[in-house]
Image (cartoon, rainbow, N blue to C red):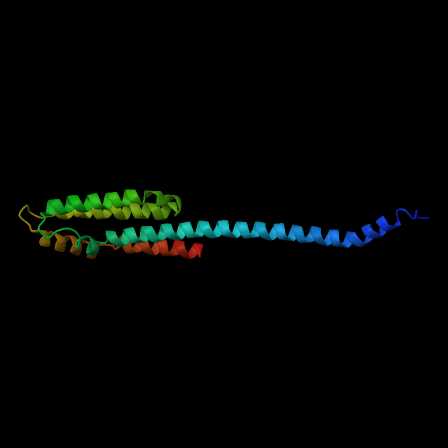
Length: 169
């Protein structure tokens, strides 16, 4: 029935066939695991970018708090110089971090912009309310007190960033 010339080949194929099937399954599962690993790493690195972005914007917001702003710059400045330098510093830091809007939610970014604008507006309002002969220490006190007596929008924005972080983790 079988030609004796082909018998060794047939036996070799019968013996090799299970090993080939096993090798194919091994390769397929290896490829599948590698794809899962790549997807995991991509997701992980995306989460790390978002985390870093949230950290940077939280730091920006902390620096925006009037208690931190009034500690900056020389005490011998005039109030108008302080307002100018503080606003310049805020705008520069905001522009430096502007790319972070790509990694955080639109509503969080809008909250950050609102916080920045409110602080700058508060600086100008405080300056306009004081007379020209006011000292820097008086300006800083009024500026800090006006923030403390208003809604703490910076802390609210930081809390919203914290909630966004909890969605990522």
